[in-house]
Length: 103
Image 1 (cartoon, rainbow, N blue to C red):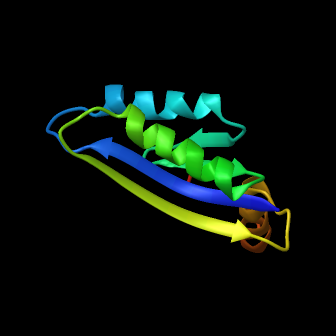
Image 2: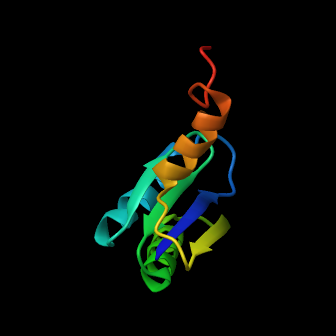
């Protein structure tokens, strides 16, 4: 089984959130997950849903602020071991190119 999730954790504040977002990303290192951060959030991959939830909770709790906003979207592939990279590769195969622009 492969569980893939999109996680976005950020304090609700003005100005740069990079320092707090970095704390959330760093918290993922304590768990048996792989992850890739992009400009809008982090894609997390785990073999077990419990590990993914624990990692997401740790990321949420690592971010400091009077108010923290967390969005979690989960793709729980119970009958497949397709990885996040393989999902992107399938789209790229259909496109006949990388799934990104040159700019």
